[in-house]
Structure formats: structure tokens, C-alpha cells
Length: 153
Ligand code: UDP
Ligand code: MG
Image (cartoon, rainbow, N blue to C red; front, side, top):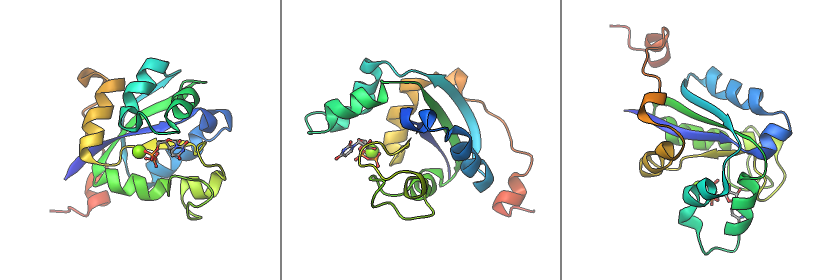
């Protein structure tokens, strides 16, 4: 089933020069980039995005972190992209994320973990419209789709 996921290279990822590396990993995997916006996420937007964590001890900290400096906000599309992207990101904390994952390779922090990715279809449906209008999501075919998915008929 084709799915879309919200991926954000967070402020530490931009500051530490990992935008290209992170996009490159997803591109090479075969995900289709359908939207991108380089922006400083307003505090109110960060509060909405992380509303599910409101009241938790780290909530104010994550809101401050996400709105502190620009981020690269993107939507990627592929069959099963949500779970694949989460696996490629690695576990939440950099110091426990497996080597080979984005967080495992480039972060040793708890909260400053470089990247956000939607964790379920419901989260993606909630998160994508916070950043993009439907018109901003490009609808197009990748020329190598049959090679990506092995649909040669
Ligand atoms: N976070 C934090 N401390 C915590 C848990 C989370 O600073 O104890 C931050 C971290 O940046 C994380 C974000 O809050 O990526 C959202 O937390 P979540 O549990 O949803 O992790 P994720 O889905 O990003 O792996
Ligand atoms: Mg989460």
C-alpha cells in the first residue's frame, strides 16, 4: 500500500550538516520525495505537532528544540514507507539507536536525535497537513517504479 510519511531533519541535523546525508539515504532506498520546505518551525506549530506529548516532562524542551533554528520538513512516499523510515531512523535516543541507522550513526544524545518520522498512518495523516496543503504534495510517477517494486508486468 502506498503511504506518505512526514520526515523532518530537525535543527541539530541542519546545524550539523546532515540534510544531504539524510535525504540521500531515503533517496537511495527508493522513496519518492513529494514535498519539501526549509523553515524555522514556529513554536505554536511545534506544540501542535507534539500535542500527543503534552504534559510529559520533555514536552517544553522538545518544543523549544524544534523551534530553535531552521528544519528541513519533507514528505516521502513509498509502499510501506512509514515503518521503513522508522527503521532507518533508529530508536528514539541516539545513545541506544543501532549503528547503521541515522540516529545510531550520527547522534549520541537523548533528545537531540536529528530526525522526526511519522510513527503510524494516523500520525502521518495528522502531521502532514500541519506543514503542507494538499496542493503542495507533488503527484507524479517515478520512472523506475517497476524496478523498485519488481512490477514488471
Ligand atoms: N524526547 C526527549 N526526551 C524524551 C523523549 C523524547 O527529548 O525522554 C524528544 C526527542 O527529540 C524525540 C521527541 O521528543 O524525538 C518525540 O518523542 P517520541 O517519543 O515521539 O520519539 P520519536 O517518535 O521521535 O522516536
Ligand atoms: Mg514520535
